[in-house]
Image (cartoon, rainbow, N blue to C red; front, side, top):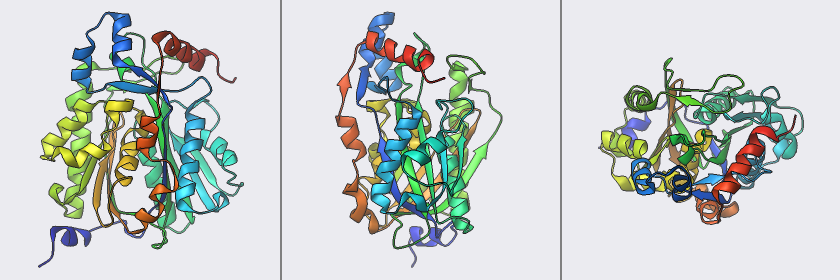
Length: 366
C-alpha cells in the first residue's frame, strides 16, 4: 500500500527543478523590545506576549538590501559549488531597495562576479517578493532558458517611531540558487501554488518615509485569508495532507500570526519551531518566510517534506512543496547556518537605532 507521501508525489507539477544552494544573512546588531518600549512608555511584556518577538535585527549604517543580498548570495554559491558566471537570472525581491530607479540585482551580479550574460530585475510584492523570485527562476530553469537562477529576498524594514511595526520591522535576507541537475539538488520543488487579491492592508506611497497599515484589518481578511487559501490550494492540487509534512513555514509578520496559522491547520508546534525565527530577529519582510526555510534546511534530514507559504501585503501568498535530498547533508556546513547569525549579535541603544534609521532615510547614496 502506498504511503500518503508517495501518492501525493504522483500529483506534483514542478518536479525536476530545485534548490542547489541556499544562503542566509542576518545583521549582528539587535535592539530589544524592552529598549523600544521604554522610550514610548509601553509595557514590554504585553508587547512581547502579543507579538511573540523578543528582539529584532537592525542593519549597521553601511548595510542595506544590496549588501544583505550579496552576503546571502555568496553563501548560496558556497553550497551550490558553481561559478557565478553560470547563473542566467538574478532576481532580488524587496520593499526596501536602496534605489527607487536602479536595480539591486545588477549590484549583486557585479559583486559576485556573475559576468554579464544574465537577465535581472528587482521585484516588489511586499513580503513575498522573494518567493515570487523563486517561482520566476524555477520557471526559467524548467523551460531550459537558463541553467541556474539566483532568487533573493531581503529587506531593511522600517516602522514609524512609536508604531507597532517598530517592534517587528527587521533586517535580513536569504538567497537560493535553482537548478535542474538531480545530482546537485538539495531540495526538489515538487509544486507551487499562489493566491492573490487586491487587499489594501499595508502600503507605502511614493516619497512616504514609512509604510501605513490597516491595523486589525491586516489579520483575518489579509494574512489569514491568503496564507490559508494558498496553503489549502497547494494541498488540494498535490493531494498531500498537512500531516504528510515534516516541517512547515508560514510568513512571520510576528510570532502570533504564524503560530495561529499552524493551529488553524492542526500542525504540531515542533514542525514549525525550526523555521520560527521571528521571535529572535523580527520580521525581515521579503526575507521572513525564506529565512525560515533556510533555518529548516539547516536541520532537515534527506527525504523530508517541507511546506512553505509566504505572504505579501496588497495581497498574495506563494506556497511550495520541497522534498529534501541526500545532497543536503553534503553541503549544509559549507556556509554559515541561520543559527550562527542569530547567535552572533550585538545589542544597541535606542539612540544608536534612531541614528541608523536616520542614515538609511537621509544619508544614502544619491
